[in-house]
Length: 468
Picture 1 (tube, rainbow, N blue to C red):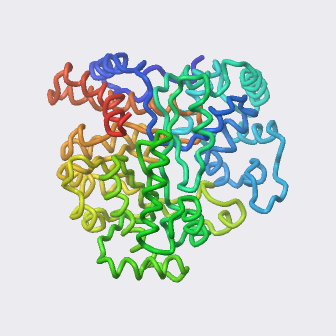
Picture 2: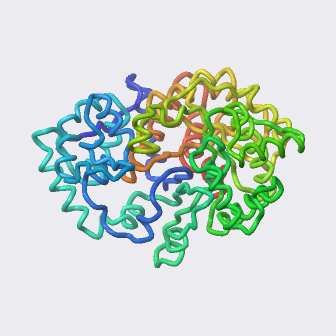
């Protein structure tokens, strides 16, 4: 049997399905451009085997363990490390069995598509994961991981990845990236500048982080001018190691362009640890505008990922830390929030600011109209909770008539789960081909145009937008 239907995500109607097949076949084997994600560069620097099936598929993937936790499975029992070092489940086979026993929970979710694709197309497994097949699965995958063909660099090449971007904080020394650059390997792994820890006054350790930024750069980060100079120095360093983009994960899309005296006063409060919640948001907003100006100077593409209530569970955050499946979407305003930044740089044709959202209601009302007007703006793909066949379908249906295809930037997978990369890109390719097939069948697009658009959405737009 097959775990994945060869016509998955294609239209049901016969003629339209065949159009989608034809489009998909023309782009299915194109190289993968993965311009934004959270894979660990150490994998490719050291190129040692992945530890075991649980560490590959369960422990690092918040899509997976958050579903299990929602059904009462303890994070301890899934091997999720605690900040205080308290012992958690360490036997990978036990973790895997718990995952397998609960695999039915993923039915109908994008995770099941990604996982089944990985099991079948990466590891050659053709039966459903369950409690009965858990050990056979584990033994098969573990044996494969011992082979050189399943080491990180070999899988990178096998997946057809042309470029993959990771995300590092502004204080990172980028050791693993410089190690990769010296390796006898042609894989292209880039870093991305993520300065949240030294931009967000509410980020834990912000004051110390800003001081460390000054130590690293030799700038006086107790002054506004020195602080900005330090960012420029770090951006230049990231760029020298291959970065083409920055990334900003803020609670809101708020931007500001305040008078200098007001900014300096706000900055003084921030580095003294004295900001109110509104002042912290204002400072983050000012820094988005400053980062946009710096992008205009140094050419780095700017990504804004707003609208997530990070670490919603105080208990989980206190015990396990960040990025443990409890980041929840919020309502997000863009029209008013982005105006100060757009008044400053929005009409610059040589600047690229890519907007993402976790608030689908903003697509047609705000984001597509903004991206369809301002030269500096591009609309990022359906992200995170909407990184799914249905989410991508809704995205195209709501945005295309207003901003077209060419004010979007293709697809990025935004993942920590390495083996899900080809699966996620396959979902995006199939979903886009299904959408284009419906346009052709409806007489709204010529088939030759659809072939061109399919290639652009799959490959060209991401490569162009991220300067790859």
